[in-house]
Image (cartoon, rainbow, N blue to C red; front, side, top):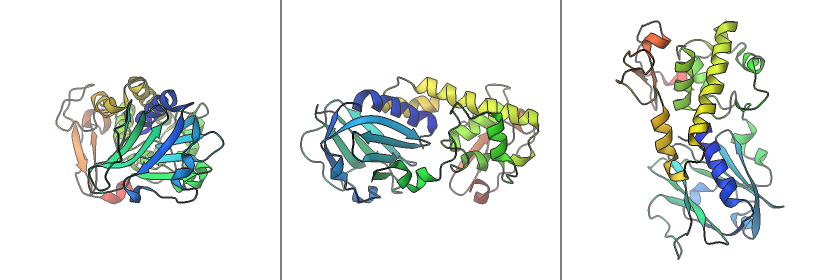
Length: 287
């Protein structure tokens, strides 16, 4: 799933390629992707793109005086930029294409979704706060005012494990499964450590790891073409998705804990005092 760094890179890419251009056509190919109907998707046509924003993992294309196109790519969705869109109309039900947006230049982008779990979501709204997922977002961890005191207030009394707390979009916006693993590895903390149990020193370490990990990932993604962002994300990960490989810090073998619909990776030496975590399928830990 694209997380804060990749979505931020897409925002920067689209800011450069969309701003100042007119949307001339919006073509829904998979009707299920549309989660709103008023304003209609066609209300974007004839509007000039004024800016592109990011809210957590949501992309927000704002038009000048008109509605906004808000997108959540979910687990298997992606945005494909094309300097020249194909001629003709796409055929519904053929392939992963869900939505096409065309500009007056002939360029534009496709939103696609692989697999059978159709979770890609598109909203046309007057205000991004009309999108339920945006309205419930917690603070952005890269915001200027996201200091240690802010993090401490968020985790105060939080009885969940750190892994689940970091992934909760209503607590902190934009962090998902992959970067929560990376942050906890950088902070040298167990994913099962209770969030409310952190000492001031541990809180400071977590805050530094959170900000540094995301900032570095955004830096790696900046300037990378939209089509290569997934590969860039994978190449920059140190523990997530690297079960069985040596830890780049200490050389211990990276371990995995599996859940009903996901898994986490960690280094026992760096994070759990050398003790492997029980690999039990307890999906409730990540809810």
